[in-house]
Amino acid sequence: MPVRFCLAFFATFVALAQPETAIETGTLPRQWRVSGPDCAEVPEWQVHAYNANLYILRESGCTNYEKPFLYLFFGQDRALLQDTGAGDTDVDRVVAKLIADWSKKNGRTTPLPLLVVHSHSHGDHTAGDAKLAKLPNVTVVPAKTEAIEKELGAAVGTWPEWSSAIDLGGGRVIDALPIPGHDVASLALYDRKTGLLLTGDTVYPGRLYVRDFPAFVKSIQRLCEFTKSRPVAHVLGTHIEQSRTPYVDYKVRTVYQPDEAVLELSRGDLLELQEALVAMGDTPKRLALPKFTITPLVRMR
Image 1 (cartoon, rainbow, N blue to C red):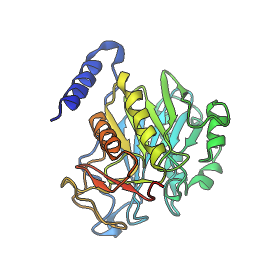
Image 2: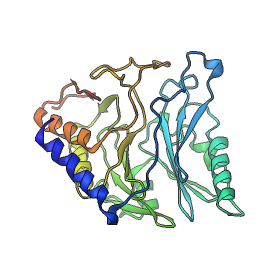
Image 3: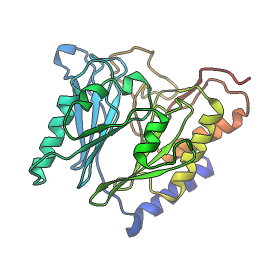
């Protein structure tokens, strides 16, 4: 293992061991069962409780081959949902029930208000916006840079040179920072409670499609800098396309992925990605790494 990764691991270990940076623990499944082989036996959503105050939802591949992940955080005053799924789903019913159940369990007479933000603007992450917007006490922030800036308190027109803290109450604060490159409206979330870094389609176990290479390089650098002084339990994206065999991914539109990789990545993976991008210089190219594949969609001029 390269020395820098050993040092990164050691630094993260030391940070996690310090009382002042103690984080809430949680669990992740070794395998997500959402795609068959028999679709008649697969629910539209798999809902996993990372812990009592954070749920991870994955849409069934039998509903939409993209099989995106959604994240639902609970604070004392409101909840936050990242992304709304792909295609025509009942995401509104599932999310409303989770919020109602959590609210009742925590002694609230009315469900928590919900803030909906997006990892980016692509349709497989925004398809449920209209349905959720019809629910009471739900604010859906459009996946557009100006709308995000207005809702999160950043100066309009300063994208992507800012970060913002979303306070959900009860000590749950989620940092948001723009990370364009995959999409102009890509937004990372960092949960201070759990040390989870949500990176959308920018970093996940699969094909990292890059539309704006210079912006992508800067965004990965920003994520590496942001996490240098913060504990990172896991880096979590919004898809799994990689198999458990390093360097091997599933083809586009694959529904059933019985040997898919785990969802979680690490800060070490971020550093590996950063190094690979820097080595490319001004000539982006497709490059398979053990846990993901850099996939530029346009060449530099």
